[in-house]
Image 1 (cartoon, rainbow, N blue to C red):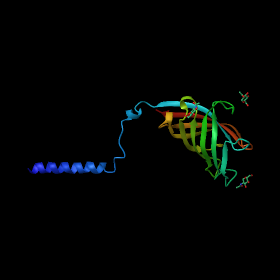
Image 2 (cartoon, rainbow, N blue to C red; image 1 turned 90 degrees about the vertical axis):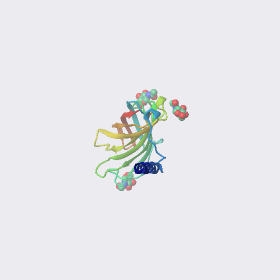
Image 3 (cartoon, rainbow, N blue to C red; image 1 turned 90 degrees about the horizontal axis):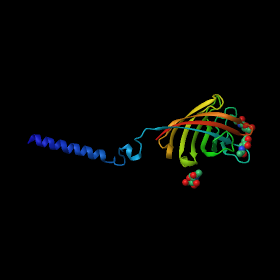
Length: 188
Ligand SMILES: *[C@@H]1O[C@H](CO)[C@@H](O)[C@H](O)[C@H]1NC(C)=O
Ligand SMILES: *[C@@H]1O[C@H](CO)[C@@H](O)[C@H](O)[C@H]1NC(C)=O
Ligand SMILES: *[C@@H]1O[C@H](CO)[C@@H](O)[C@H](O)[C@H]1NC(C)=O
């Protein structure tokens, strides 16, 4: 009899424990990866395109929304961009998407930007998919700048990886820059 009561008490205790875990906990659940097709191995995709930034002239693609506190390092500046991404270094080559975001002068000893941008693709199977970049871009001191890919959407959902940026042309006088981007993306 005592044993029975003990078992009953234990059962009631466990039941209350389960109920209290579920209390306020039913907004989240563990899922099976298969339901979202996330059980397959990740793919590694390489993308190569050219980023065209133009802050002056008749059709600027980027706008300085905050002037720097130092013209030599660009520290404190902020530039918002909607820059075309093309298949070749020439501006007249095929546009595959836009780089939308900003770069901000983030270093006091050199020109180095905090880059926050989405590559928004608009061709073929990539139309509507995006890759999110957040990184450090010391434009003058490094020939190759590596920046992390911190996520994506559409085809690039749950993406991770990195990009390599190489300046192909930079003319601060006329406010034009062309940068080659090699992207290495892991995604499902
Ligand atoms: C930076 O250069 C611009 C244009 O020459 C000038 O108007 C501005 O006052 C300069 N800013 C500083 C902080 O020196
Ligand atoms: C694109 O621009 C390059 C360099 O300015 C030029 O040599 C080429 O002829 C242009 N191509 C077309 C199709 O306009
Ligand atoms: C990309 O998708 C948009 C929105 O669905 C559509 O309007 C556009 O025609 C598509 N572009 C291409 C090249 O498929």
